Length: 247
Image (cartoon, rainbow, N blue to C red; front, top):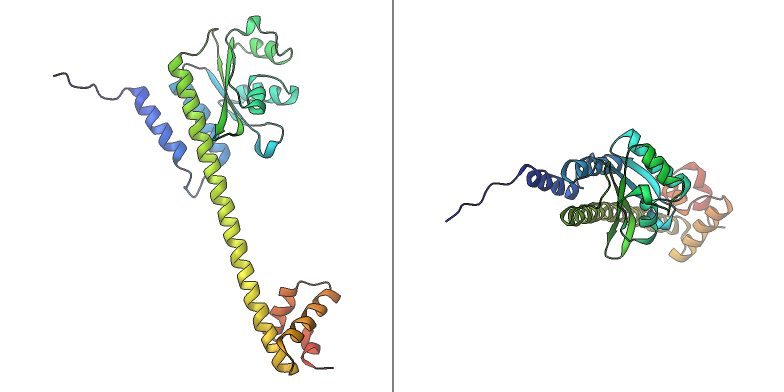
């Protein structure tokens, strides 16, 4: 019986990378740092020499977020400013774009010469895509011509999908937290308004509906928030004492 060999260095790096991509709940989470770690680790585990990420949220024009190095970042800037290149096309279409040999590439008249001048001979872009939603693209560069291996292509797609899932989950959590905060504020505001309405009705010896109308008219005429006027009534502010008298 043969014993299975332990995990290789690449397998260990991949395991750590996927674990990092899933860790979106850390208090110090930062999108740029998250994506910089993605590009850095892609170079570490895939047969590529540089990586760039473009994000395109809410159907806006793709914007560069980060790259492996500052020099690599300029390749992303070029794609954004020229509005051409594999990463831009992938972000716009959601399709994988491959240029195995840029020396014979005719699609991008501004992008290709600059990339060749920087010493790269091949480019490969995969979408940051999950369940039909594309939020950007992950761009790989190689200094030698030729396609990525089938294994690296599959891993590239898997890493892009994992990163997309992390980013969308983080945004969903933030949206949920914002909504929860808004609902809490709305509930608190409503409690204050109801309290002020009851106090005003008692002082004016009127119905709750009449008290509410008086309070709302005062807020409208004074161009103030109803919740602000209600809070001043509850706190007994002199700015609203006139409301206590029935006319």
